[in-house]
Image (cartoon, rainbow, N blue to C red):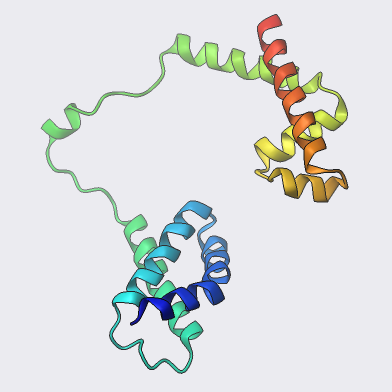
Length: 165
């Protein structure tokens, strides 16, 4: 398949296909990787030259990749030998480290609770719900610049609040 055709198909269907994969996988990064793989397979395909419905062909490739992905995710790891497992370091945090981590989380929660309402709202939307500054601005009816200023102030207050406790 010609690269110009693949580029055209990507421009026409790439975002839609990635949204489809993201909904199925619930992981934007894996969806982006699989979207890229769909178009790589399309490029390598010899039968794609005379497609009547390129969108359907792309979704067929995506469905096959999804099946491969889920099949691979459900396979159990195979034991190679106990010697290999003995070399894997134990990453379980020590009781002291776990206690310190819980303390840090409590201090951060208190710092967030002390933020002014708008700053807290923006911080939570960005850091915990993963919204972009643009999406937050649209949702709250404010400018992106205002979102950025509130975010910077919220982060500074959280940093200061964490060091005070």
